[in-house]
Length: 587
Image (cartoon, rainbow, N blue to C red; front, side, top):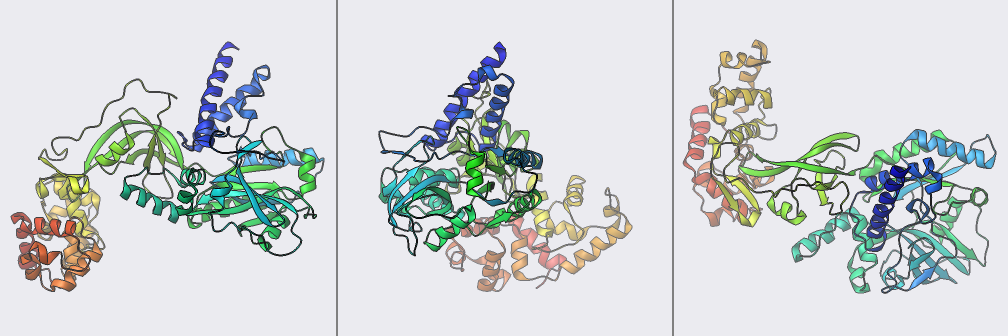
């Protein structure tokens, strides 16, 4: 009992701190999934120890308090409650059975399913069709008056249109930010040296509650209705979805992605449809919201002190989770750029076990304030490589020893000196093709589909060829023999002959592909095509000075510098000569 009491007290303190960060100052320290896990742990302990459950527990409260010294307080006529959540089908089915039990029916219940937008809940009050007040959820009972800021959001009508509008109409919805808008403001913030927002939800919340409405007006905020609050003066429909359709007629923005479901199976189908389409909405959702459609049944089922019993949030697998950085290693890419990669305490995210995350460069490490041993939030959306979003500064599960991350003085692949390029915030190995790590990557790039397209030559074969010292550069590929190839693991007579044939076929290419295949830093396929069109011949390209190189369409100063550096290198020029003169590559 004493152990449970201490754990409950600890979790309460922790969750109250996180609620303050999330709802009040708009700077959440941990991902939603971690917050949900801690809340569920507390709820489970309180269920097992009912005598330790108190009314001020985070499981019984909504959101956080208001910044009363900044915004005026607004008392909600009907509380703006939070939603309980489920994260798997069995938990949803248990919720569905509870609905039936509370209504004492055995037949199916009509449910309205909508997207769960990841933004800030807002109440809009219209008197005689005119917007007179907007407020946040706050603690569910008292919110903040943000009318001046909301008036700057162009999609929210200042006057409703149409007929039969109630004299007093409170509409509830979500203010959020699209992915395109989020990218735009972060690009501007980075350019101007301002704070970078960690996700669209933080950006929307921070923008909406900014002290200067002029700043809010510049932020790309949008809004979508999700329900009716309090109304009087004219009767509203008894159907939730019908109310939303009325809102749409009156000029309020309502999502088209909603559905009436007449069985639990249909709800699950809607959930999976939304999950599949999630990458294409253009804004963040973290699940779906399921509501009893009949408003009379909603009132009959009732609510707890913090959440309605007639609605539930069915969440997707988390795309953001918290874990620890155990180490940082530095990897050498094909152009010599040395990239830091975080080695993580393995954790599942979006159904995939993740143990590494890219850190891009030292500038990113400095921006995050990252040290080895830190707890971090990582994000993985779709098939994108996981990225570290933020460092968790709170004391939760604190690691006793933190170690600074320093750039190695020598290349981890070959021991050569490294070069820091301040204009690109990158570190590069100076070893060139003498570096085994660069050599393998450069040859893989040379043989890749968009370059020389040498069929049959993959990573495993190239790694063995380099390790056995059969090849040291791309030109050596064309000197390979059948005997050398069949000596490799997994290569038989037929595959060896296919590779030799593919090498012969690959000699006929285009000038653009050849330029791209050289693997010059900053020169992608489009840039290679521009160079091929501008210079026409290889000799003109090789003899061009820096000014001439930068004259080609789409070739900036950085790309021109890399081209000049590459072509001025005697070893690189010799490899190009061998490829064209001795191997006989032509276009």
